[in-house]
Amino acid sequence: MEASIRAQEDARAGLWRTLSGYRIGPLPLPVYATIAAITLLAALNKKLPDDMIGGLAVLMLLGFLLGEIGARLPVFKHIGGAAILCLFVPSALVGYKVIDPEMLKALTTTMKTANLQYLYIACLVAGSILGMSHRVLVQGFMRMFIPLLIGTAAAIVAGVTVGLFFGYDPKHTFFFIVIPIVGGGIGEGILPLSIGYSEILGRPQAELIAMLVPAALLGNVVAILSSGVLKSLGEKRPHLTGHGDLVKSGNDADLLANDRTDAPLNLGLMGAGLLISCAFFIFGALLSRFTGIPGPILMIVSAALLKVSKVLPQSMELGAYQMYKFVSTNLTFAILVGLGALFVSWKELLAAFTPGYFAICAATVLALVASGFFVGKWLGMYPVESGIVTACHSGLGGTGDVAILSASNRMGLMPFAQISTRIGGAAMVVAATILLKLLH
Image 1 (cartoon, one colour):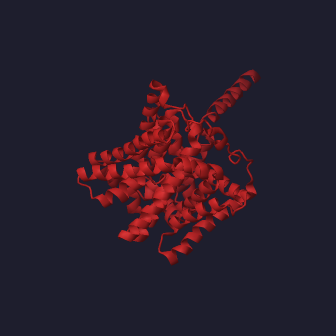
Image 2 (cartoon, rainbow, N blue to C red):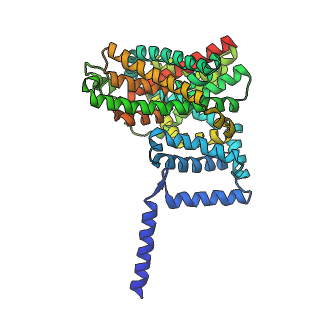
């Protein structure tokens, strides 16, 4: 009898260990299922807190689940499937009125009343820029400046030209299709861009996000596919590739040495980084009153200037970087879920995907990549690596860079990709917003 009981207990323990081996995001499956059940029961009984506690629970549960599914689906996982699912599925749930009203109410409070996405933007912008190695920022940017400049110009010309062929207004093509593609992703690009556009045009931010998101998603897919093609080209023609080295002199290794990403986690510095991020956002809002330039744009400019000037102590930069890593790791999918549910209209999203729209997005990215390939060759870089790094200018932020570099097996190019995405994207967001203000 005792042996039978012991065998049952061992079987239950084995089942628990097996289930705990599966994870949804960072959570073991049993823990995730328990939290999800508690949240669902609270919503059904109208006891889900209508504040950030309830909203964060729903956002993170959906974000972890959809992110996990998107990262595992065959083919889909290679084209940014996690981000796409986190945007599309919540938008569809709201569009078809499937989502629980109590959950939607908590989401609305968290995203629209508490403006969680603003805190996310502040941490991403401050941490991503301040956390970059000063040497990589300066020397890497000097290497990538000309390919990025010529590539961006070619992308604009190609996108607007194809847009004219399909009957699109050039101004609309430039501001609402091309710029979102080269803006640096959703968190660092589309969100501050939509706030700036909203202030200038006097239109709801939700309406603008719905217009900007499809272009960024399609651009990212084309960039990933282009990266894979460049990898194949390098295998067939070895003289065109450095097998991960960008510059033919072979001195990338010294430049890419980073003393910051492996630093031990410091909780105190993370608190300082959180406050610094908030200060950047507040400073941008303050300056906007006197300059007329939207606050998030000024936040980007001030962070870049502070980084280049080396005024801020390195410990504070590290704190901002570690806070950025925490937020980007744990809240990116949650924020995308909130954007999809509340800011991206399902009907408008589906309506955006027309043959002409596809053609504009593809032409924009292909012109960017081709320019990087040929200009890089002219500047003494390996064309394949130069084209891949330039392609990251049209990626969905950090996650887009990972997808693009993974498709080409060139993860060692990440610091250069970050220059292309963060600095190149920030420059485009700032320039487009100022230009729109001048033209409006």
